[in-house]
Length: 277
Image (cartoon, rainbow, N blue to C red; front, side):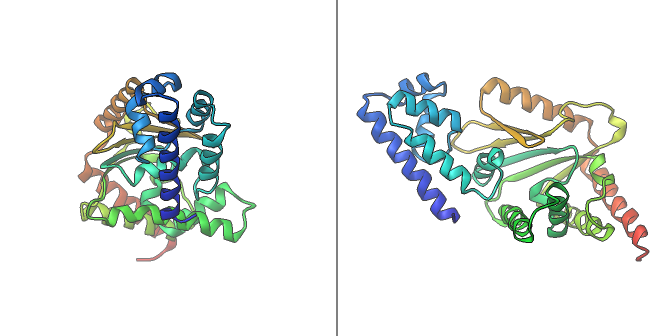
């Protein structure tokens, strides 16, 4: 489903939610109270600014006695996404954010990946996948990076663990290209990148990725991801805790200047592996 069609479908979801809510004589606040989200969130669902998680859609069906229509629409839109079900909503929000902060403990995050790196990573995690499947995943990942070229792009702050620089994904030439891409983005100030060195020792969030997203007209969210699972967090207390975790990571990381030098040095190490000059 094309992006425009997906957005139109979510707008239909929102319009139908508003119609059925009003028919039931409920305000946004009263419906939100019954499905365990704020009234403001119900308003954002109705305006297609945010997309409800599947369990919220199921509770809405329960309260509005809508015979599962919102669950079915939600499942259809999630299944038609080019992303894994657990990441689909985070990907939708990414394009709306004014600021994105990523922590990557193992691999270069998707927004910064080159095609060879993304391809090698996709094949490594899906060894029996068809070429068509691999290319679809790679193209979806590259398309996400288009937001970095937009004049209204979100501000992107990335913390890479030093492990990312050491773990080879694909061929040495792929790693050289990947790190050259990251350093080029850093030098043109399209993204701010820091490296969390091994010398920092144990740090919070080392067991999975962490993402923070801020918006002009909506509360911030946090997204955490582990193996084949992800959690989009919008509870204010949980988001605040995630922000504090990111602050600790940022404080322990190298400066952007030192990080740039370290990433460039890693590229040089891989260049020596290829014997090129």
